Length: 511
Image 1: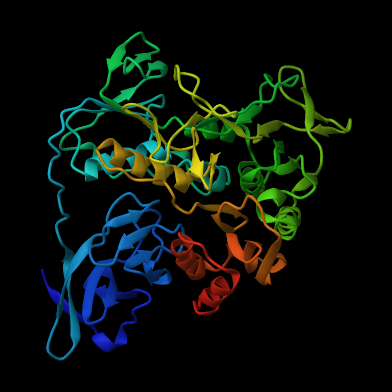
Image 2: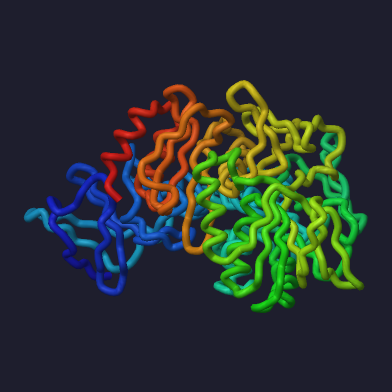
């Protein structure tokens, strides 16, 4: 190990990290008063340059997806990263020069939890992977079984509609959610299986092959399943939904440049898929129920900018209508709309929403949408927790379900900690990002109502930040090209935030 001088103490700001070179390593310096700590410079989730994030109340916040790490230890505080930052030794000498070692320190190993319970985690998407990572990080792993239907689960499903369909990432290179060492010492029992039935009273699951497993504690993370509308022709060849890596592989076998595809649905997944397939070189028809997409979530002006962005890139938009039927001789050839228009196609991709995957759970109360109803700690029964798209939880005096990737991870982490004996309430700020034609839109909060939207910048130029407010309180924030401000607001919105204070924070946070 060799130490290198990399900076003087007075050169280091305290509101953000500073990237430096240490021999062959790239390292991020975090200064707090006269103390300096050094960590890996790129986020372990997707490689974001962490110096472009912010430091706020003892946490380093990633500029891209708002993961957070403790400044004093590098420990993970908020996903989507699921590992701590690598740490490097620092020495500040008498002349205030900062010296950093060129090799990372050995990671801290959590002491084993003296817990011999049989624990099941069912589902290996965002929530399940976060739960397993948390259980292992907390020292549990002696009797852990992880069940999922896919042969190689626990991968970043968000990449499918953003990058894989566009041809920018092969399906085989979709990032894994967990590092290999998570599966080791002690090993996790991985079981490829479908859970046919779960009996909370007996604490027992029945698998599709007839095997029965008993548990002492379990965490459900089966997410949601895409909905196929009950319309004529939905069973024709060339009709797809997108949930798994295998779905993407089958679609890409036919989605060659020049082919005609109808994307049915103007949800986030439909819009992302339309963008990706257009980038791939297909002729894309987007069939949306709304004249302005995402108007309910983002407002008219931002939704109109999203529609215009698609049309500028050649998407043929069919607003305010639905697919009534699909026709063809064995293979889909036309989509018939409810206004009787016919669209000639080679492929159809449905993105019209999802339903919670809860049919296998017996005897528990469900919300109107089929999700399981949890308490504030995400428990749904004695010894049973649920996280992600399959669960509704109390928030602001009502029950709500949020279909966001990072929310599922946040819930998986919290539910796992409660399973191990903590008593935490889920009250995190939702964060969501979507991606069209190299433009990233970020959304903080979950606005159910607003009476005004305050803009900094222009949505039509795809550089803006917008505050969705009810009276003077900020309910949600939407932005393009404001990563540092959004990183700061992701933490500040954990308590009520006024419009005036939000604007002050934005103006005081240069990008």
